[in-house]
Image (tube, rainbow, N blue to C red; front, side):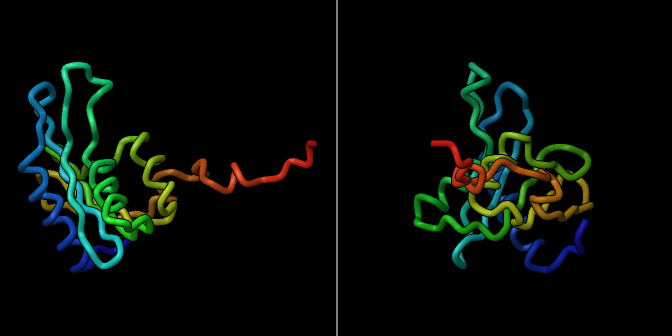
Length: 140
């Protein structure tokens, strides 16, 4: 894990703010996220659905807000959840985020004071990224 910076804590504060808006009537597990991209901060929160598969994760909604604003080079994301230890992004979110920067900084917090920081490549080694689709396999 990586050392926590003041910028990490600031981004985490935006994630905590977003967490307050989470819609989690089924699990009760509120998650907030904040993405730093293009010098701006974009927030997202989890939005649950009675059909659990239709639930949207905070990380993907925050990243989507950045993309909507025209920022596709995500530099960092902060995630905070209702867990007693730092909340990590789920596997689907890790893969989703790798599309925009497989090495982005991931700041994770929970209900505790503990903060964890890692590179996305540490959390999702060998991610399936664009390069795999661009390979010429020689077949014709």
